[in-house]
Length: 492
Ligand SMILES: Nc1ncnc2c1ncn2[C@@H]1O[C@H](COP(=O)(O)OP(=O)(O)OP(=O)(O)O)[C@@H](O)[C@H]1O
Image: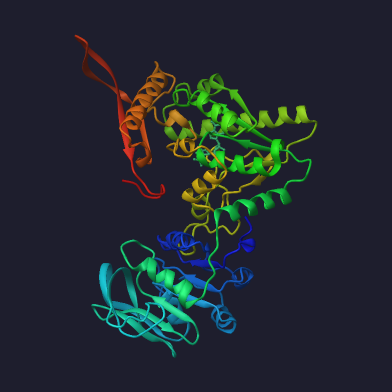
């Protein structure tokens, strides 16, 4: 997706490493306005090329007083001011604005963490001008704005008297000391909404239908009229939605491969292939490489080693599939489709100041281990700017069956990571498949499958005493686990 082709205004978030940065992006997107996280230290040209009406500076774990604390590019405030761009600094973003514009930030006398009450002191834009209004907000800061730059006014204060909201209406600079993006600030969402629409006059209109049309255009521009494309389909939501989208764009020049590695769930292969063929009309080749995978996993106990072996075998299978396709078509396939999502991209691009290496090129996340270099396939990652719930929305528009979209996620290495110990010993895999099926079926019968994020069984490498019929038995133990989650970022 080309961010510049988006129909709504685009709101970039300069990321300074807050654990909440992606939440700001999500809140704004939920208002039908496209938003993107970019590194807080991005060059000015990256920001200006997006032509934004509003820029948000995120919070972060740093203090502006620390050596090498990250900051926006030189010339940013001047550019914003001379182009009438609205700037909102949140927490660390507010401290940066205050400091870089000539105010003073100091270590707060009473550092504020958790729920606090604030009171609006001045009629203002960002908090809706309701003087005397009190609201509960989520604070998480050590530093505070002590002296404001010329032209700034305090709009709200915390109970402890610390600055909670500021603005310079004339220059269009705004700051919130608290985090409006978290649900612990109950009025935060309304604050973001009124800031974007009423203060900044942002145009909404970002729709998943447009994302789909735009993606199809991008794919058609990328893939030549005679080019062929490969996609590894796991039966999971991401690769299925990505493949369905690419298929809509280029038709049967897309060649999908589904790998039965002997580590799939009960009747997984039959169920997945049926959906691909009957409901989605996707051209999929199913390869059965059970023996190949299980022989490599014999005697392997270490889960990390299992993952590595599986990753390598997947690559061999994809490689063989590409060669066979080349023989059949008389030409090499050129592209490989991956269902990389936005959280993978964010995780692969650590924000400045985290101590992790910052990569400017987006590194693709692929837990089947990356592609072999001599395959020389270019990547198509049509979902790489979308969050999981947005991918589900896109899937619905692409008429991927609801039951399929609602399937619980299943790991790439499959049951190999749900059997603790050697997967080839005894009949661990078969036992696990049967237990898992019974567990999932019971959850479905109880009508709670859709409210659970992921439920699964794990085969443990211990035996315990039980009674079956009239017999005392000594047999394996299987653990059952189920978690709920909104988006797979946190779980209960
Ligand atoms: N059995 C399989 N056959 C073919 N490809 C597979 C298989 N398992 C995994 N893959 C490929 O590896 C990718 C990563 O696997 P994993 O299941 O961890 O990913 P994911 O990000 O949850 O995506 P998905 O929702 O598509 O499964 C998949 O998107 C798919 O392209």
